[in-house]
Image (cartoon, rainbow, N blue to C red; front, side, top):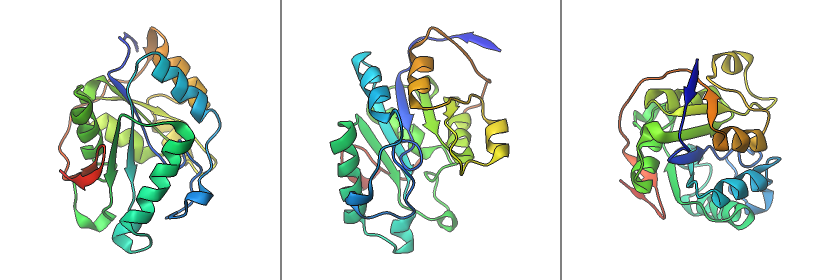
Length: 200
């Protein structure tokens, strides 16, 4: 189904496997490596005055595999390489914690949208796995999957949109029309970081 869309209110990126290479539970800034096209895609979106934010699960904190400070050091390295983001929303919980922020729950998308003063439905959520797409779907946001070798085949087949890379994402976001799947609205968030790491 083809929809005429305005430029999005914001583009919300998953971190690991999307903006940077996925190094499980990484607390070492020296191991941060950009994904192909990340800097160019973000530069194009910023030049077009589209807000950009990060929405990321970081359960390593809950598991005790890295500290909040180590996580922040990695995030600082991401911004050093890619430039400052307009908001960060981070879930430090594990799957069994029952939070409403950990993707596929929609809380991080809701929180980032609130910080940016846009509707979640006007956001684009970009990620590499099904959890990212499910979080987008839950609030009626547009989801764009950028698969990696780790992305499951069924996640690709279920995705509302699939892009080749982050430059392709920028092309799609900045174009006038897209092909997308209608999605439904969803819930709230209890923990995030936006311009500083804090409870919300």
